[in-house]
Length: 287
Image (cartoon, rainbow, N blue to C red):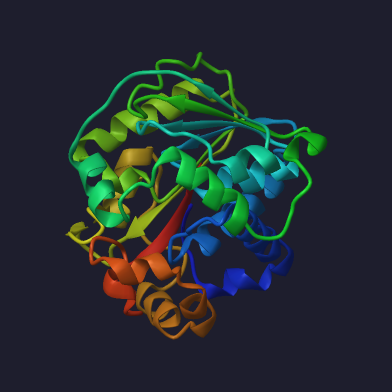
C-alpha cells in the first residue's frame, strides 16, 4: 500500500493529543508533516494488532517524537540512527531511555543537519534549559512498560540487530535522505530483522510522476514506480490523488499553525524560512 498522507488524519484527535503532549514535555521540534506520519503509523500498528510490549525498531529516529510516543504507549523501542545522540534531561525524566554505543559515522547528511539546526549548546546549559523549558510534566513511560534504547547503526545493514528479532519496523521521513541507490539495502536490512509477518511501516516523500531531489531538505521524492521497486510490492498508483493531497496540505491552517519556529531560522529544511508552501506530499508505505 502506498497511501498519500493528508490532513484528514488529524481527525484522530487522541493520537494528535498524545503527540502534542510529548512535544510539549520534551520541548521538542517536529517536522511540518510529522503529525500526519505519526498518526498514520499508530493507526497501522493497531490495525495489524502490534500491541504494547511489542519490540519496534524506529529507523533513522534521531531525537524524533515517534519513539517517545510509542514508549509512552508501552512499546519497547529500538531507536536506530547514525548520529551520536545524547538523551536530554527532559527525555530522561519522562522516559526510560538507555544508550548502546555503536559505530562512528560521517557524511553529507550529517553535515546538512548541522547547518539546518542552531549551534549546539554546552551540555550544562542544555540540561538546565531542558529542565526549565520542558512543558507539562509527564508520568515516566516506564510505568506503561515502554522503553527506548538508542542504537548507533547504519540503517543499511542494522548489524547490531539479530535476524527475525523485532515485531515491527517503523520510520518517519528518513529513507529519502539516503543516496537513492542505497535505499534498497536499508529496506532489505529491515526485512531481515523482522519476525515473520511483522509489518514494515515507512513514511517518506512522494513525487507525482518522476523522482526528484528537494535540495533544501536534502531529500528524495519518490514515484510509485520507484517505491514499488524498492519495497518489492505491486503498486502502480497512489492511494489517493496527488494534486488533491498537495492542495489540501497547502490549505491546512491547522498544520500551518503547528509549524515549529525552528523552520524560520534556516532555508535548509522542508519548509524554507518557515514560509508555508508544501511542495511534496508525505506517503506511507505498509508491507
